[in-house]
Image 1 (cartoon, rainbow, N blue to C red):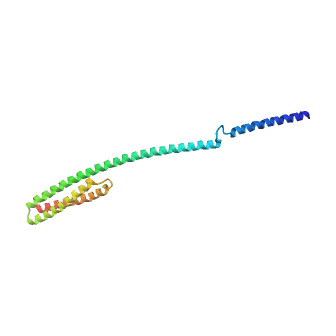
Image 2: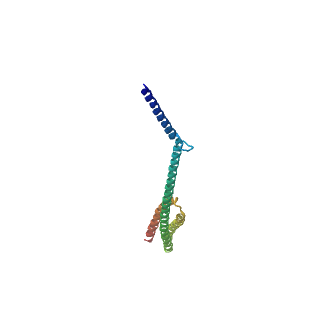
Image 3: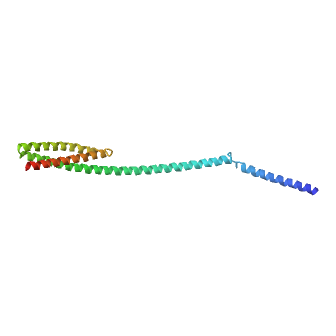
Length: 183
C-alpha cells in the first residue's frame, strides 16, 4: 500500500505540474504581450485598418474612373462640337450659293421686265417680288445658321430644309412663268 500511496502522490505532483504548466500557458496566450490591448481589440483594429485601406483604394479607383470618363466625355463633346461647326459652315455656304442664285434670278427678272409688255411685266414684277421676299427670308436664315448653337442646330436645320423646298418651288414657278411669257 505504501507503493500505492507513493504512486498516488506522484500522480498528484504530475497532475499539479501539468495544471500549473497549463495555467501558465493559458495566462500567456490570454495575456496582452506587454500591450495594453487584448488580442481581440488588436484584431479589430487590424480589421478596421484593412477596411479603411480597402475603402481608400476603392475611392481612388472611383476617382480615377470618373476622371477618365470625364476626359472621354470632353473628347466626345469636342468631337461633336467640331462636327456641328463643320456641318453648320457647310450649310451656310450652301445657303449663300442659293442666295447668290436667288439674286441672279431677281436680276434676270428685272432685266426681262424692262423688255416685256405691260401685262407680262406685271406678272414678272409679281414673281420678282416673291423672290425678293424669299431673298430677305434667306438672309435671316443665314444669320440664324451662323449664330446657331449646337443645341438649337437640329431645329434650325429642319427649318432650313423646309425653306429650301419652298425656295426651290418658287424658282420653278418663276422659271415656268418666264418661259410662258417669252413664248
